[in-house]
Length: 112
Image (cartoon, rainbow, N blue to C red; front, side):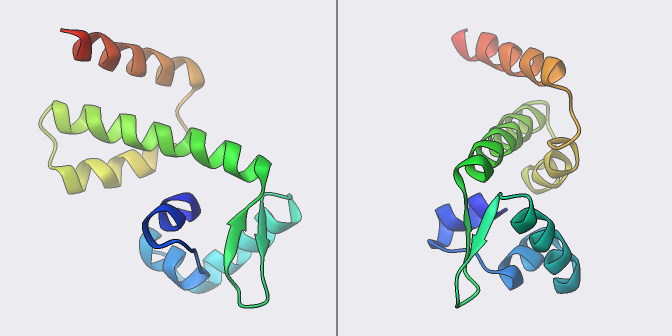
């Protein structure tokens, strides 16, 4: 969500993350503390959140999963809004092997 917000708005704040994910601000605060302690994000004096290099690497991988999963769900007839919601549920937990197989299938379909 940090990457998506940064791409869409040019910045990310906890309140925007909470809204985007449909969770409470206290939940986001706990998560941001863990990400900051893990070295994945930085927070400036105005509480704008940015990704570190290691945070960006992970975010890009997850965001790619989100886009690919959303695309395939829409391709099989799922409403785009529901497809986005479902992709959010799956993108963090799916194995690399399964994701790679899904991505390869989409690439094959796109070649036709």
